[in-house]
Image (cartoon, rainbow, N blue to C red):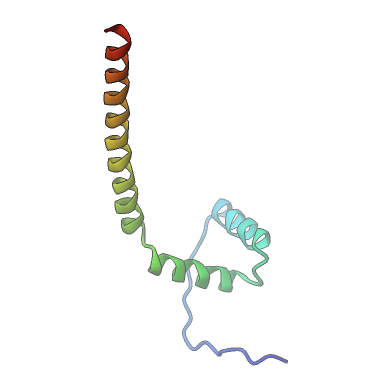
Length: 85
């Protein structure tokens, strides 16, 4: 029998029926043994990539895409000018 790392802290939180159903679907889909393990995984994932970081990263991607879109628009404009010259 494998030795499990004993946990010595407990937390509790409530979910609506809909939230629990979603969590249970994720748990089954990912083949996670318990809701406790799912909650632990979610917490650890959140601590490594909190939403603020994701928002900042997404904003950076949006800004780079805007620059590329402007560059493409400028290239198309130049291309059209060459065709009409």
